Image (cartoon, rainbow, N blue to C red; front, side):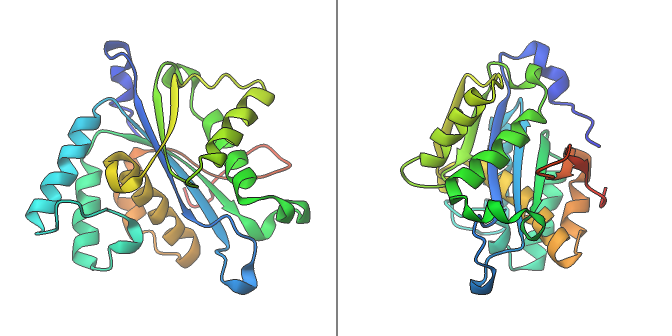
Length: 228
């Protein structure tokens, strides 16, 4: 479990910065190649500039172009993948992750739109983060759809369920321009790799940053991930 060093600084900073991204897809068209799992990851940090600078330095050291986007599926080189996660292991952030095994969902879930599905899972993950840490913070989510429909449904979902969101701002951003979202993608990708192929090598490297890693249970309280 994470030491929560950045969260321990909460009393000395105005707010934390959160970022979220997903791995897998929201489709249920398994015969057409839809992923069996959907993984959503949020990270938080009191030092966003430090995390951003760390990725900048890594790009320079590895001879990558200045606008190289760190995404798990782009790290085809084992050397670059290891170097990236070694850097992440030493950064100051915490992560919350929710795993959805789509094959185990009741049939009525198959009728949900991708936006509704995303909003439900994001709502559940938000509830796993203590309100004290969400209060007055910023949540940046990778742009799930260009028109922001998923984000709008998420906000409505929180309001409808009377969940105090805490975040003073919830916005969509493009991962190409936001390093913190890229880190969230790397976390989600490592988890997806673990549950899909049983390869936890990269996940184990950043395990000390994981505050919560759980499977989503639609009709039952969320259960801890048996991998932990």
